[in-house]
Length: 90
Image (cartoon, rainbow, N blue to C red; front, top):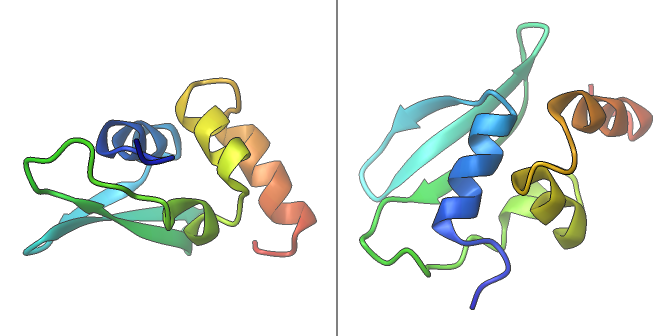
């Protein structure tokens, strides 16, 4: 089973209040902070719910564990914003 499933990718996008842009094979989750795009990642639209999205942690500047925690509601958007500020990504 992949580290980040399609379902978890959708939860991460929702948690980060991503704006979605539909594409051909992927939907694009665009994450803004104060009107500035700070991160983005694709979500595969295929029927395979087990298709891996293991590139998402790097795209949102987190480790795999923290990305999972974000999707599983342990970390909040505000927590993520704090981490991004500490990393100089904002």
